[in-house]
Structure formats: C-alpha cells, structure tokens
Image (cartoon, rainbow, N blue to C red; front, top):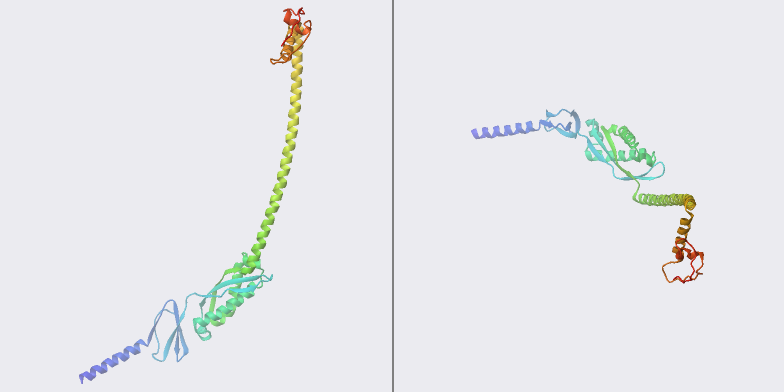
Length: 298
C-alpha cells in the first residue's frame, strides 16, 4: 500500500513538474516573443525575463530584436548616362512590429529573401536615375539615404524598419574598366609628348637667347679690348715721344737695339748689308758714326 502511495506521489510530482515546465518561458534581452495558441498569435511579449503561458495549448515563437544584416548580390545596372555599373550593397534592418513580421514573413530566411529583392530594386531605381559621376562623388551619401527611405516605404508592411543602407562597391564592369584604363593611358602618353615638345621648344628659345647674349657680350668685350689697346698704344706712343724729345740720341740707340733684336735672331739666318749702312753705325763707334770696314754678320 505504501509502495502504491509512493508511486502515485512520484507520478504527481512528475506531472506537476512537466506542467510547470510547460507553463513558463524566458525572454532574452536580445529577443521578443509571440505566444501562440493552436498556431494563432495570442500575445506579444517584449519585456525580458520569466513569463507564463498555458501549458500544452500555447507555444512561444522567438523574434530577434537586434539590428540584422541583409546583403544584395553584386548586380550590374545602367546609369542615367548609359554607363554600366556593378554595385554591391547591403542594408541593416530591425523588427519593430513582431506580430506583423510573424504574420507576413514568418522567419528570417523569408525576411532576408524579401528584403534582398526590395534592396536590389531600390538600388537600381535610385542609382539608375543618376549619372555615373554622381555615384562616385560625395552625393553617394544622399543616394544611400534615398534608398533607405524608399525601402522603408515597402518594408513597413512587414513590420520591419531599415536603419541603414551602404553601397560597398560601385564601379564599371571589368571590360569597361580595362578600356577606360587604356584610354587614360593613351591620354597620359599624349600629354607627356606635349610636355616634352613644349620643354624642347623652351630649351631652344633659352639656348638661342643665351647664344645671342654670348655674341653680344663677346662683341662688347672685343670692342672694349680694342679701345683699351688703342688707348694703350696711344699712351705708349706719347711716352716714347716724350722720351725722344728729352734724349733723341738715347731714343735712336734704343730703336736700333730693338731692330737688331728683331733682325738678327739667334739662328742660322744670314744677313748681308753694306758696312757703311746706317744699320751698323752703333757697332763701329759708341757715338753712332758709320763704320769703315765691311763685315758679314751671322
């Protein structure tokens, strides 16, 4: 009898424990919960902590309340100026109405698929209305805000809010990029040739100006040197004239010595003159009288 009582007590405790376990649930701060009764939503729980529910008839569906990420695959599109773009974008979103989210989307996979379509569509719509240069300029920040606002107009019916949109990459397709690179390379080569030609022209002008200045300076220097030489010769002549006026005999003797030096070099040259020539008058007598005997100077 006691054994039966113990068995019944154990079963009662087990049943109570099972019922108690199925009567409570916890909500994490990063989550919110929807209480379902036979699959139909009955209550949305947003406060974290321990909560109760009807056991066995009610279940709990947890909804993430953190900011989530959805990425759109790289997509090629055409800008307003007919240039092709390859765009890679992503968006951050969060669930603001758990009940509407559950009823319209149900789970994360479906939500990501739907938001990916919305993101891709709005990226195409906003960037397709802009020129390629605008996408690469500082206007990109405003374009991302426009994409976010347009997404929220569509995503609001799902109980979610897009908090941010970013364009990670926006560029030309590889084939277009290579063509543009080659064109830019040719432009730079052409500019380099132009700069070299301009530099050569300037170099020739500078060289010609320098040659002209050298010619002018040389002519001026020659003129100055001739003037100075003429002045020196004039001064020399004046000094010699003054010296001749003071002592004509010495001046005649000096000129004869210079003539001897120039006419009788120290080599094998022979000079034949009359012994009575005035040229030899200082050889015969110190006073300068003409010599009687004739002789040959070697």
